[in-house]
Image (tube, rainbow, N blue to C red; front, side, top):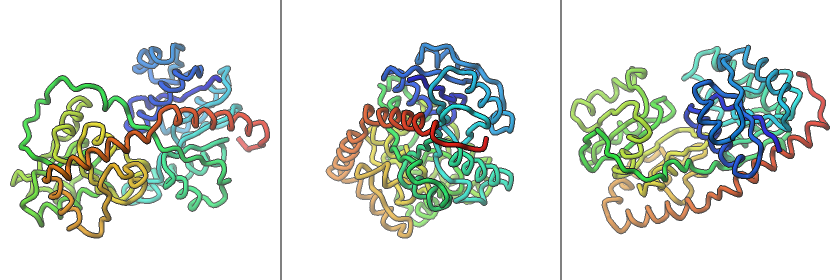
Length: 364
């Protein structure tokens, strides 16, 4: 099978990880992977696929990209086009598989501009209409799409729980430049409102006996309200903001932490607990969105309605026996993610899209 993969977001967070997993595992399975890339990623991607990438300079999230990517696809001698986002191109005369990662712009509209909300809703609807198959990384997102876009054919949307990013399993030989007091609890990721860092602020203000709270992964200056709420904890050194970190530094910070916390109100997948498990660190996450699916029995999954449960869960990890039990549970849960099964499902969906394409008439 020949697949054209839109890999322009190779370095872009969760979407980038998904693209890398597809390129690596498709290639290992003998799939001929052609790619559309940004110039700076072309060499790295070629080393994986061994096929010369197509470099595109088109601006992402622009009207132009919807025409250019379709044009490139039509000129490519491939069986199927794989778009790892909802930016499905216009006038594409090839079967299309797309991924819809979440519905964050619809779930939390106050975090986005009016234009961003309109664009996201329209593009999600377009992706659902035009794609021959749609992949979600959790059953949560699949159900949400079916509920919000009731006209969609249910059998078109396929839920495949994403496999972990195996880079987190690589040996760590270096030390971080950050000197942090131990023990410390860690939150890492975006600082957006739905990530619910305010929940941790309330918990830490209420319980001064908790370890230091470390947050990392974003620029605090972008969030004035959060910066204001954290002011006292930062001043008292009960919270430390590390901001943006390199991948190597982040892995060390996670590995050395007492536990990883994710009180998010919504996740389309939620890789954080899996990453913690891969480094033998207990994770405590909310029961919202897809987190119960991704974290499974490998993490402590708690409701957000009861802050005291979170406090006692953190404190319980001071017991060595309980802590080791949670780490063992995490290692056991990780074994349920099978790479071969995941990529086989992806390939089967591509084949289904090819079969369905010839039977469907569409506008654009």
